[in-house]
Amino acid sequence: MGVREIEVFRMVMNAGGTSKAAHLLGISQPAVSQAIRKLESSAGIELFNRIRGRLIPTREAQALLIDVDKFFVGMEVIEHRLKSLKQFGTDRLVISTHPALGNAFIPRALAGFQLAERDLRVSLKVLSSREVHQDVSSGQCDFGLMADEMTVAGLEHSPFLDSPGVVVMPAGHSLSSKRVIEPEDLRGHDFLAHNPEDSSRVRLETALHSSGVQLNVRVETPYGHTVCEMALRGIGIGFVNPVAVVDYLERGLVIRPFSLDVRFNSLLLLRPGSPLSENAKKLMSTLRIQLAKDLKSVENHMKK
Image (cartoon, rainbow, N blue to C red; front, side, top):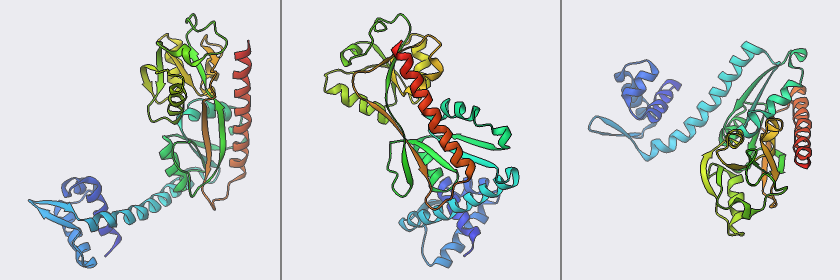
């Protein structure tokens, strides 16, 4: 049993058949079938049932795939690292972040980080929180930033953002004259919501439920910046992470505090046992300084 047979097995499992697996591997279909038979013979177990010319994975195959995937993820990490070292050397940072911080906040922080003077290259990966978690777990980034949507057991983590959300609306909206938005104020208005599974939306709807208010959701989106853009264009009102409104402070978007303490949370993730470079440590410090600056700017804007 060799690595090649294991690779063919994984491809058949992921592709759903020998024909597609052969195409993806660039070999013939008989070669795929031969590799599978060789693996079964070496292991002494049947990994597939042959039914009308198709390979149907057995329970043993499903169990084996779990360990095979772990092996290949490790190989992919090594391959990724070798390519990175070849292209950039060690003067490179890889940051994996969820969109709430990756779309505009981190670019603002990087603008003041003197990348050219440091001769530093950055790979900024804007991903779902689950993908950020996977990147940190597998060592494919220096650090990650994700929403509090899933467990972070097994990773080093610390709070990064913990701030109440703000209500956004177009200029001239009937609620724009109010200094603070109450739950009852939202009743009946077209609402621009984050996706149902978003932890901040869950917290908002839970808080509104106790006040007997149900949102009239007109548009759903995963991105706070999209909510701000739609609110600016008069499509409705929304409730967003305060970091998302920074680019809209001077664009006419009306931003108001909400009377209920419904918060947006982000976590900083590190892989245990992976030492941080000095550049990574300095950038993390810069991000915290930028965050404090951004939150203060929003707070001052709402006092005007």
